[in-house]
Image (cartoon, rainbow, N blue to C red; front, side, top):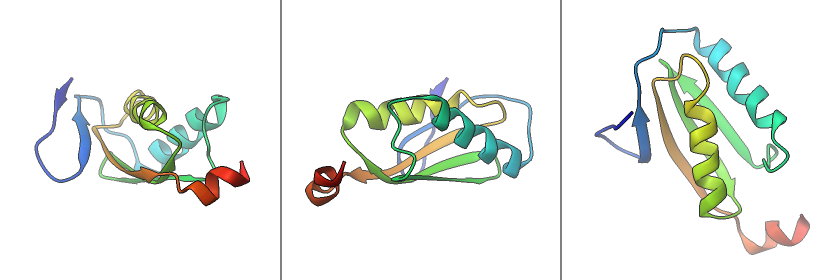
Length: 95
């Protein structure tokens, strides 16, 4: 794996056979639902051309990194762009 140049924090690229973006998105969401630590209500992945962009909120930097790794392991993902923001305190209080 290598870091990708370009906009967005945490972009990572790797060579994988191409898959349909909808299939990749389903794979990312399924992988998120399999993990007990994910806040699937607060994280919204999007896939365009095999590039997964993560939007929403992460509880902390460790969870942010875990989401990036989870997404990059889905077959067909060519890179991951992290657009996650720190979870606001008011949202944390609701958890």
